[in-house]
Length: 346
Image 1 (cartoon, rainbow, N blue to C red):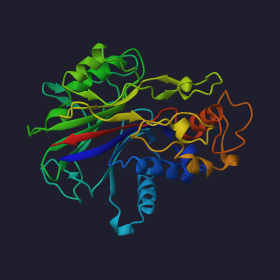
Image 2 (cartoon, rainbow, N blue to C red; image 1 turned 180 degrees about the vertical axis):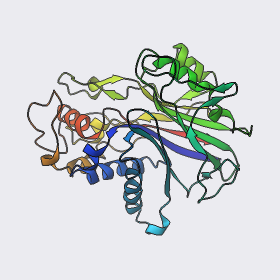
Image 3 (cartoon, rainbow, N blue to C red; image 1 turned 30 degrees about the vertical axis):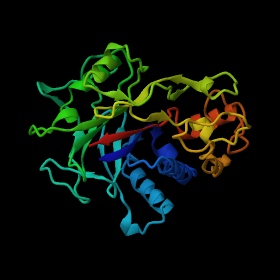
């Protein structure tokens, strides 16, 4: 039985402005600590710009490797990427090769050096799929997929990453996901035993909505119904939830685990040294404020302070209250929270 820890994150416009900033290595270290704290084995990123998408995974793999104090030759992290075709953004799926699964290619070969079968999800059993754009029902951004196989039970599973186009036809894009071949079978008909369907779906999660019902009818199980995106201009507050806007991000599973473990990492809380009592995060999550040392490593001089809510520069990191935490996370990290879950393949 393979238990795979999976993370999805809309990392928000990770392009030259972030990569060439003096805080880029601090950002990489922050991500590495997050991935390490949740023992993530497959990491799906969206909104990495094409111009940096060949650089970010290698730097992140190095940071993760250094954290585990492994020899460079033993680095277990690999990745696949593809141009999403829109807004100069790439999809990236990073994965480990030292756990209970390995990549599998179209010839059904597996191994640490095998490049997994991957690409844009374009087909269903009835033919090509037209995912919607912002304003029309076709020619939009397609999802990305990669294939893996468990080493103990020889079960094939896929990982899907989808960044839905935001607009009138967004629900149609979410609904269309359920028809992907990459969820149920290889192009030659070889069955896929399970799938993790991750994404920024750009529409609030609601189990009663027809588009989410379609995914759930596969059948699938949602990782969480918590909010994941930050408000653009929140009111002052001491309550972390007051800074959240939408439940856009999620991971759905077509595995036989009836009640998957899934949760959202509250970056405002975890990046801060906040006064007690704030309340402990769920037991499955890392300790309160575990990211604060990495937030504290940021150079204040290199912060851009471009958001409308910021009148004066952030004067201290890590943040010591929720308002400053919002300023820091929303400006320097992302306007979306990561979603983490476990998928069981047996």
